Length: 94
Length: 315
Image 1: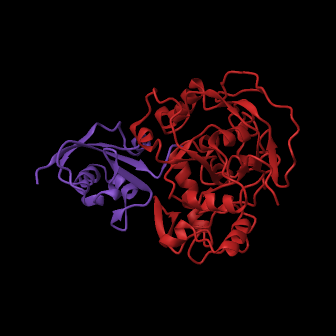
Image 2: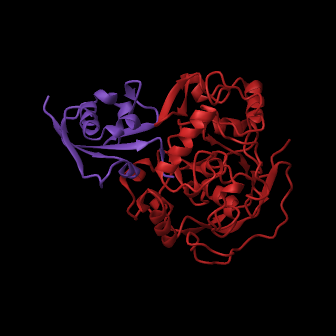
Image 3: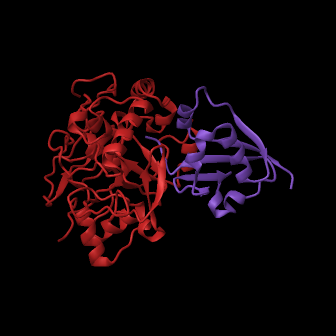
């Protein structure tokens, strides 16, 4: 399968977890899991905010375009062309 | 408006409040119809963004400040307690979403943990109990769990606008009691820490000490413990601190033409609104116009609710 170009949008408060302003987060990936692996390789501090017991944590939702990946194929959802992944905590704001 | 601080810069606009005498309902506060100021001013958001570790865009969904007409309603003076929820579950056999999925969320040394057996009956650990805390607010409650209780009680959840009105009255004020922050009169992280918290480092210092000395035990307090000092001008207790509260409103952006962070735009129409800070939060989350967008299925150690009604509930 060919990789798609993925833009990853994370909650704005995650900027407080890194020493400098987050750059635009873009990678090439064949699946949601591969895109998140890329993200957490560069920003390991995001890992606990995304995963629990080896799966997507209950306190976070991820949208591929307009669709919740849990209603698709979860972390194994394929990415075949350019896409946007939006990470939203189960509680946003505050 | 009363005396202001650097965080209290909303415009002063006279409110129009109905003078019709409301029907008294035990345990509930009658709130008259009114034109109500909602949301935060631009200056206030600038001040909040400059005062702590999150940028202004994290709070941008509180803007623009605007007015809305709110009909008369009744709201519970206090949060729904463990004892209240126990009576509901004993009467109906209801099982919360956390009970059905088998785990609840506790905050560990670095972040949230999914812990088997944790739910409203066992809020701080699988072997924790509510028996000595029946007058504390119930937690580990998802939106559906709150709505189910409210329907059983012949009530409903307050709308977001009703909640904010009940928290600060017709005109904006930063906290229910006024515009001067005082952590001594509200159940929040700073209250237990004993000092102001404006950044992660201080919050983690408090939390680390809490885990060391009390384990995962919650710092909820009996409902109304801080009354009347921290009550809203309408006499409603715990509108800041103790636990955050589900409202019945779907999360929407106040101005669809305005630019908000993409995550808020994605949450709009999907999430529900939670209002009011909890025992785990500090100063900025305690504000009356602070908004939380939440997945309806989410529950944790810091979220509970209270009920409202459009008419005097029977019985």
